[in-house]
Length: 303
Image (cartoon, rainbow, N blue to C red; front, side):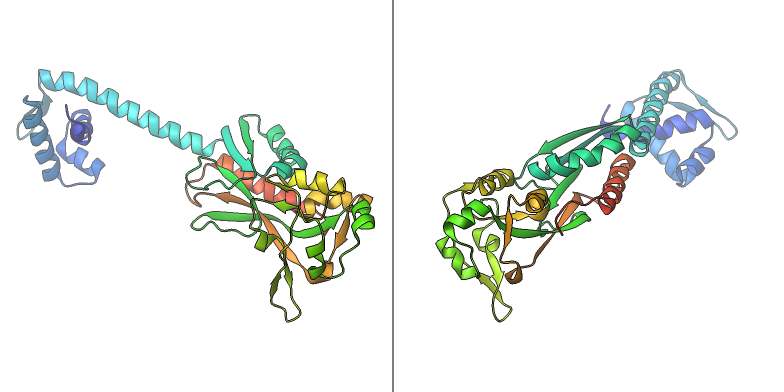
């Protein structure tokens, strides 16, 4: 049997079940003559006669009975598979794969997931904490959390919360190296670098004419993890650019001090991204709705 005969076998099963070309044609939404031609072609392909036709009756041959038993099983299995797929997309059960930046996952996302998991015991979360860029479409993740300006196109993104980037340093560092009063002063300071963002974008300010101003800074430490830069800044290694949510408690406690605020207002968004807007299982839509509502009510930054 060739796989291209599967639709014709399914059609034959309907003819046999209903004992009528006309009824099977109505069920399939095609003309009676098309049903007759497809069954005749199927018989030719199989090399057996499946049906005995007369002007008033339609009956299965012995070969037709044996073929029908197999066809009925195939149709039943296909229907069960379709029901299973539809059920899986609608029931709140199954695994949701999430990719999120390390520090955001640690400080906020794990806490946000807790009430959702408590309310939906049939759901499991597979969370990968990773600061590196992950392709939204090809990665296999159901939800990807992005911080900053979005560069992905053709994907669906939902903003969870607004934040901004702040420039910070420890009081001990400023006592030792001085406090910069203007962006140009940074050339004399140890400026830490987050290597997953181009330095030209990381250390960008508003110039006197309102145009972007890039300061060619230098520093003794670069890292792919924002938490490392935060810890280094608190330890007095140098000045860092970090999301407000990451340093809100440090600013409130005085472990870090904000710098050059009037020269910069780097607004960023924290987004949940899906590869496709349509066809998303209900468990994923439910989690997305939960995250949006959770972050409406939860303070994540020093704004």
